[in-house]
Length: 174
Length: 71
Image (cartoon, rainbow over all chains, first blue to last red; front, side):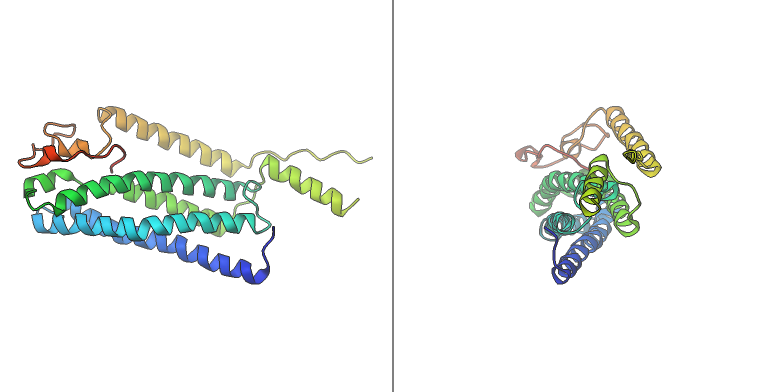
């Protein structure tokens, strides 16, 4: 079902807010992640791990799920469709993969935060935990690729999309 | 009667993108194998784990690290 122009604009605004907000939240997370990776100070590490969990659980995960959901609505409610164009299909697959990795990573971050919240955990233990930089930076790269695909919308229809287009042309030009 | 047009094929940018994805996935798998396959917070928490982390001094045995990825 194709959305009305007013509803489409609202859905687009919501999708942009969630998607760009997701990237911004991850940027803030990376600042803490760098502190976790480089700092030797126990208090800094404790604070960084606790803040990382709060940002991941209450900002990044909700934005990721909202971005995925609003993206699905935008695809299904507009002429672009979900499987017709390669840029839409690849964006969808990358978003699903990044979201799944994020959900798994949230468990790891929760474990780090539990360790940091425990007053018996020593500075050496905290320093041994490390960081999640590989995943957070890698995830950001993937999010930027998705952003570029959504802005540039490179040409190219899937075989399914092309067949659909041919059928629609036949119906409109008998 | 006009010929039925044929599918123009997969665009070049999709093929290039696919090759890049395959290379990145292979690199990640290779790095995981070189890093003795450890991929999770247990890598940091347990003494003498991969990566040569220092043994923890207190209370680490009480925690059961979740399975899954870690950066």
